[in-house]
Length: 303
Image 1 (cartoon, rainbow, N blue to C red):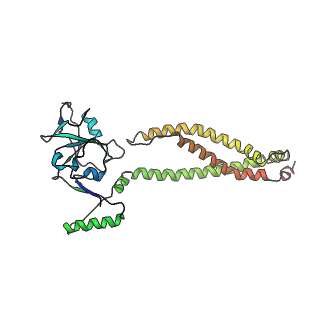
Image 2 (tube, rainbow, N blue to C red):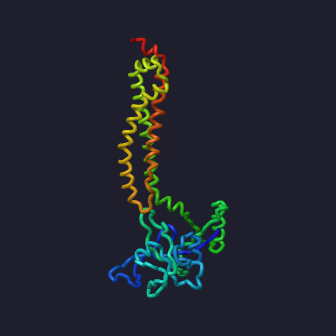
Image 3 (cartoon, rainbow, N blue to C red):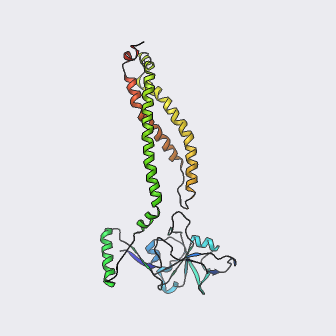
């Protein structure tokens, strides 16, 4: 174990959201709600939060036990231009803002970060958060932690939750959609390849005599392959020209529902187009090369 801290809720969720906060310059008609997170020593070091301004109160209880730490969303909601030194009244107690930290994804990963206030309070602690030593096997580290807890609470049942498992559950629906989409994508590609294979066979059979004449006139295998493949490549390029703008528009609209999202880079669509061309060429090449390598005498025998 590397670090340990306590808090009123898990690091994967904001359990307390409330209003009743007041500060200088606040809109008297607004009642904004903030996440309310209490913690003990080394909370920031255990979570590896990123300090943007001020200093970490969880490292100096003696001097900063009454200080408040805000996340970026809370600073924006309160309208502070220079948050350090501002004073916020909480339950009739006025506390100074001593730090600002970068927003952390503690609740839904599909929504903006909850505007939250963090301050030290040892009287309201429900969860203990541990940062395990990465050089020790996870199972061994958890077994050692359980031994320590049972030493102080022999009859208690130690239960724990890994953050990666908690976040995996939040992405469960998206994971299922991704798996289903992958299955049907692979199925669609296979069906398309079968169709291309059949079409290439039909075209090669229809142009069998033409291939024989070209070979007699000195055409190389490569020139015959490029001639027969050109039609399929043209069709694929037309399909890409239609599909790429439509898919880009759909993906852009779909990504807008997520607060944290990736950017659509041009290389994604370029790679898709190149992949489609390669799959097409690999699918039709067998039939095209078989027709190009055939003895022209056989194809012209009936003429």
